[in-house]
Length: 376
Ligand SMILES: *Cc1c(COP(=O)(O)O)cnc(C)c1O
Image (cartoon, rainbow, N blue to C red):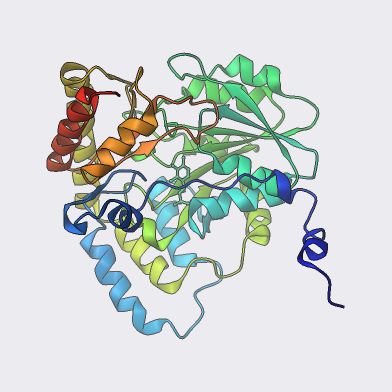
């Protein structure tokens, strides 16, 4: 039967209208087109990617694996799971790998636990995909706001738990603010909430604190999410992983899309995991760049900068708006991330991925210029 678009649209699921769109960092291509820039002069510090690029070993492994792409990948990504288990000191029955990226894991976890009308807790401002994945299952995000320094309060989280709460999402280091949650607070929430706790450690390799992944052996309600997109420099391959209580591993796998990690991706990820040189170099480069921003931004600009455990720093550009400052930087070919689209972040926060020392110097120069502009 031929119906109108509006009639067909009425068939969409009830939850769909409440699913917010994901707002990504600006890409190089769109910036080049909008500002008529030379792509060679544009630096992209808007999505927390590794400015040193991928591990050369991962590139070589990917190139070699390309000749096998006529065959489906291993359904359980057994080799990659074993490599991750080895590296994390956990058994392989506590490892799930996911595509696309850790986003795929977050989506599978939401599918596994959420019914329409359930609640999830998010500690805002934070990564927005938790809300999106939960809303797609008809669940309702409940926001617990961070304090003025963007630290989260474990007691406030526990107070927000209701009989409908299923999942508590904790991002540590938190995107976009850089804060860590202490082991004590994670334990407190895992022990006292009665909920599934999803601890997102996308940036933990850049922190001075250890991963809390070993806690998945202690708590049957704790999942730790990790990704190859940040320190490992494989954002374009879209692969992440989860460290889980053993009972949950087969359940998450059942909810995941089959063959979501490709042959090429699996080979590259295994090589990246063991490239300690590249990992160490990336970590040192971020530590140096963070220190540079923390010292130089308050000294050379009127902006304040928040301490960060990730590969990014967040700055407050008040009384300017993040929109004006980002726009000014874009004209210089410097792409950073305005935080307006993060719930609860207000209009004056900007997140800057730590780049190479040359890139960081250009960011600083451009920030100085933006702050001095008339009419801003
Ligand atoms: C980048 C990021 C992820 C996931 O990235 P994938 O590319 O999907 O693996 C998850 N959480 C946070 C906080 C991130 O910043």
